Amino acid sequence: MSATAPSRPTAIRFNLPTPPASSSCRQKVNNLCNIAKEAWEKRELLQLELGANALTKATHEPAGANMTASFDTITAAATTLEALLSHDPRQVSEWLTPKRQTILALEIASSILQFQQTHWLSSPWSSQTIRFAVLHGKKKPTVGAFIEQDLDTRRGAAPLPMASSDLEPQMAILELSILLLEIWHRRTIETWALETGTEVKTLGTDNRRIAAIRWLQETDEELPLDYLDAIEKCFAICSGRLRCWDDEKFQQHYCENIIIPLLRGCSPWIR
Image (cartoon, rainbow, N blue to C red; front, side, top):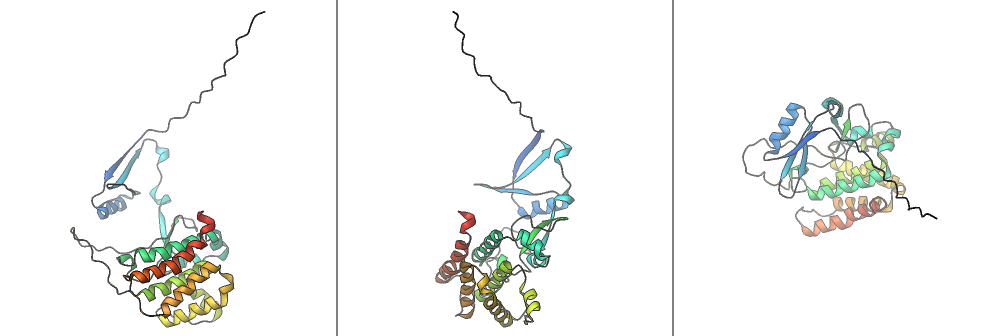
């Protein structure tokens, strides 16, 4: 009687395709404005990486023609939130979902406090200044919100001075409250005013505040409680005593009463 040796498991080998050869290196950035200007003139995409020690620029030279793409087909145009909200309501609802509404509101509110002493907040942010990137031929934003600001053209190593207190916190926070309403209702305050026959003057701070409060009062039941709480706290600040950005107690008040409620509203998405 002969014994049969146990068979060994069959070895399966996978031949993975080799990607097209390409060279990639990183170049240290010493002058951000210069490389941005060069990329724009050459119509190239600029890829930056902020490392532990330096800001670097990625340069790629793909070997295959299939890996290249036309600059004109992949670049995006900057579109304002106001313009996006003017689209068909069904299209707006497709990209401005409840998840995106709450996260966008939190991002804007927290960014205001972060940029309050820089030139990025030299004027109140609104649906006319909040912008999105939209690919050519598309109607949905491709990335998160951003703002544009003209940079000082002066040369030299001297840093730009900090922004002065020309922009009062009350003005910035009033426009924030309007932004929160616009984001949730997916329409601008001007559109709502036109629909309801309410007077809203773009340059009239008092009129805008009164109109925004009326909008809130008429639609408060449509808002999540935390979201509603943040907007009401914005109006409370606007109607209260004068505030200063560098007041630590005011910063704490802003975080506890505006940012934290908005953060709680994002809890279903960021757990």
